[in-house]
Image 1 (cartoon, rainbow, N blue to C red):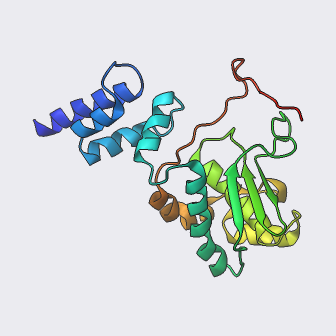
Image 2 (cartoon, rainbow, N blue to C red; image 1 turned 180 degrees about the horizontal axis):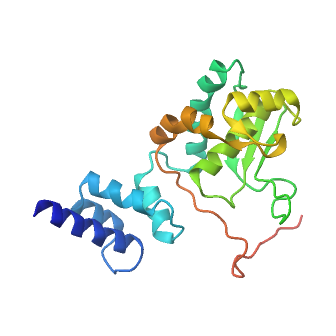
Image 3 (cartoon, rainbow, N blue to C red; image 1 turned 135 degrees about the vertical axis):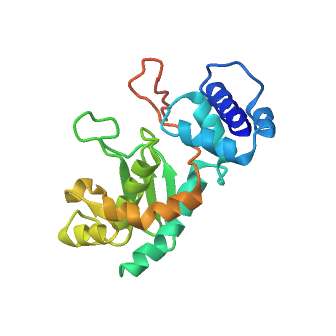
Length: 210
């Protein structure tokens, strides 16, 4: 009987979070749910791109902002780079933002960018919201931050050591990357971020001219 009630409650909360059922605010719902049910509902919804997912990600995330999550990912990546024989600079600034070129290209869209100087600045495109994809692009840019400005053989060697695979300019997570990063991603929890869907007509760019 208890299992049946738990399943019914899980189905109810899932429908609430999907917007199919009108119910109290999320914080009131959480008070009626135990941690296991809340986590189960979250697991079911992680692949959805609806607005309620953005809300519950913010509620359950260990990090107040997406930049804080990315900062934590960078810090968690340092020992992985070190164990592979590479060193990341201390002054890495990372944020969600459009790359300087090809940000909305339909042919060769750029999903990340790394600028090196007195400080290292990394930008991750806001058109993504899949955690693995974002983390993979971040790893790719961290390889640049490790001292490899071009997509050279040395860049590919470093990327491969971190579990990336594919052509140098588009190296992405492979099986070894998942083996190396699964524990880190699990420890970070949900990423409090939702993608910008540039294909929607209501998504309009606002500009400022100086």
